[in-house]
Image (tube, rainbow, N blue to C red):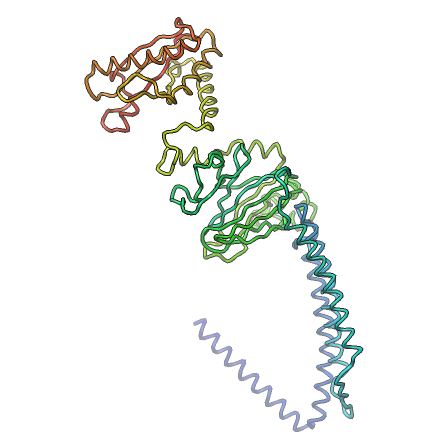
Length: 500
């Protein structure tokens, strides 16, 4: 039905236009062609003047009305150190081209009025004028030279890379894919690890080289990400599949993310998210309700967030590449970063993608020590008997033997530290096995393993009066011995705090 109505309207409009043409022809025949031409020229010339006045007023009024929504004006002054350079360049270009825009339109429609058709007027043929040619060649050339030089200076300032490793800056990495940004931060070492596309798997989507120790502590941020105000930031930018674009409009940051061709952008945030909100708060249009359906809800300035967008049409899920960026103080940033954990240690360690499986990494030693210390403190403070028993999770033995594996020393040294921290603490070390093999042999092996742990502790200065060793064999399983995974849980060494 809608299509039929549209077709009928088109037919009706066509009929009206045809009839208007016929009326015009009839009028010309009655009044005479020259008189019709004179009237038409006069009206067209007057309407041209009216149009250009209304048009230029509309352009000026709309630009003034919506200036507070445009980057570089009103509350949207640049939030980065380099942003004012770009804003000034665009402002000067806008002023110059705006003047040309107004003058050319005024001249165009004024000439249409002044040189309208009139009886007894003859057109003058002007083939060439050297003076005019010089003016409209030299003046644009001077203006363009001025704009280009300013642009080159702005480019050299804005696109300068980090010149020295001694500069105070931080580096993060943004990888675009359909349809998300993968944001990677350096860990406590302050360095991003190496990547190789040939290492990309389902569990290692960035192709990180985990033989490079700089990768071990790098967190990957899956939700909103943070940056500290006043800190120079270098962003490594790349893509996995198609062309994307790393776009932070309020910071005047925009750079293509190209598969196989890493790019970068360096900028310094100078306004926190909270400070930018306070700037917006000064303007009436940002004090309107964020949700028109909820007039008593939060205002527009209260809901403002810096956003990372993709400024390329990278596919039908393009919109979902939106990510929230929060710019905060250095203290808030440090607190947030401390909550971010290593992708490698959380997701890859011990998996098929881990090239370091079976090794104890030096990065793990302090992490394990802190975890062990926290667990002992909780056990000391707890009044529940079950909480007093703790596993020695990283104590291992040679197969079928009570000989400690070399890497067990890290866990046992943590226990030595705890015994020294709590000099009155007395512990019982217990060995356990699964039910594979002879029960008596299992009990003897568990006793020997517990004794080996006690011996290690006494050799490092812990009094034997504070230590007990006992082997339970397979009599106290944690799980049914029906799978290899469960049997591994049952093969364990643990200690119980007897007194403290």
